[in-house]
Image (tube, rainbow, N blue to C red; front, side, top):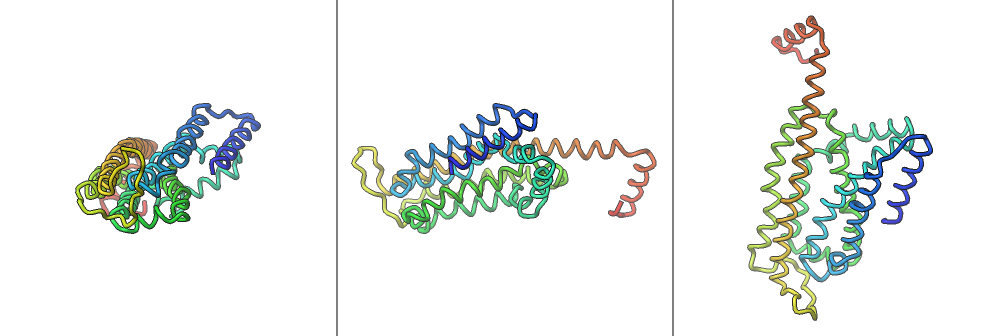
Length: 275
């Protein structure tokens, strides 16, 4: 996955430059270091290698794959790169993709709140032990989890003109509710004095190796911290989208003539929504 992602991105950058256009170096570095780099550190480092044996490694790994890696990939603006590298046809396809219902569903905070809460609630069930101790499911999570995160993160910056300002306002308010909802699974893991995960921790030779209960408490602490920390940039993104939508709607009213504005006002007073 790492080799394919890097090769595809660099090929897109080369095509943009062959078309006589330029691509910011900061975006390339963001994609390679923050996106692909963070994925490599997570999957090939301690969290990936100890995911099957330690609950806190598994929990932290999943949380980072669904939050941090997609955010790093988004820093490289891959959708914009695809549109600019492929010309007008690719740009039209990307625009159509962003207008599609699945992308609009995944790309709003309402769905993200429910979906992330459901994913984190799996850590409160014995299914988490099955997922981390079964080799093929553990490996599959390393592929599926960041892709799901990308489906939610990438459309966020491009949906400002799709939803109304009222809808984005609701998203923004719901994001504050998410601050509380995301923390619940981590808090429950931390406060529970019974080991929930069905998979037993492997006894380590190092002195720091935690007991099963301590392992679960560490998982709850880290899940709680990560869930709260990543909500801050989401709030910033939603605030930017809110401001963009407000400017767009304000400009649409400013462009109306006096007669059009009066007709729009009369239609509003009559309850006419077709104007």
